[in-house]
Image (cartoon, rainbow, N blue to C red):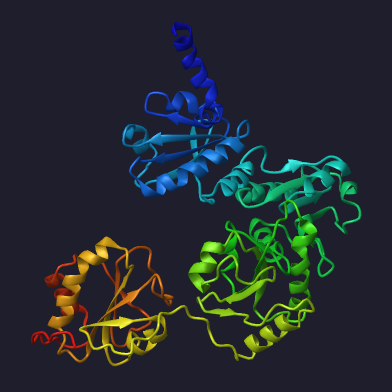
Length: 492
């Protein structure tokens, strides 16, 4: 028994090696050791957090996974600001989580990258090593450009020219977004139509196709701004692969996306099967202001479910095609995606001819809507909220939100108080089951806006207290007409 008892600690330690290793991947720093340990790291990513912070809890497992993948490349660390306020205050931490990049212990830059493990990994990989890799042989050029991501390679006749200095300056500013390398012997880049002062943009090899060049040459006057513009305009090509990390950049334009089973790590040919069909059709609609993309359906499952009610079993192996404009308008291709691309071509023809009806996620319009608080759904939003003759106070809520439930009796009393005001509408909308139109932005619940007469496109965000007198004072101040508070009326 004694011998067995002595073995228990050792057995316990060896029973959970992965957990112990995982905890060590993210270094814990505090007031006493931050400066000492941070200065030993060439590049370090630090999250400043609070244990009670919900966003911090969501980030923590992704941070751990990224730390494991970046082990030996970039050190990841964390600081509990509830226990080490001196360090957090010194680096200007005012919210949680705050994530910063440090170089040899000095605050180098805020971390503005993705919050997923994969996104953190790829972002921080670009933070290591020189801003631009000096390539000295054709083999090094081939190795550098045979990458999952795009590559930007400057070609110069020597190491002392102003062109190379400007290129390196751009690489230092843009390294977080793109991969840079440079050549000082133009012969290494023979075959790419590059002269001694040019830049080559190598699109990702996995996206190579017969519909566009895999390498694009920049030959204009080299400056940081001109190079940035060139990369932005040429990087994605005719049909980029949209991911969770780059979706916001792509959606800055009107965007068509075909969602299907994509796996560029293990099945490049299969992933490009439908992409090639999208590109074939896209090439017939050049210069029309619409960008094309493909995306992995599994990566966007939650979004597709929320936006279109699409589940994993919907659509089978065929792509699900949507158009999302920069104004937030949505269209879906209801016809099955045919292998000859004819269905997609018809869909685009109808879109450009303005024959498509916008897709709106909406609850049914209520048959009766006589209660003091008017129920608004996406399909009735324009009729009620954008009514040019009425001031409208609208609450966006979630059925599960406790704050919304607490507000409900006050909000109802407000509506009853103003019931006889024919020019004022108190309304509410379930923001979970209905699309919210621009320019309304809802980040949490409840969110309340006031849309007065004459300013329907410039609604006012209500940010006051939530008692009856507070709402009434706000409405008296902002309403387009004088309020006559003449009493209430029971719900019909």
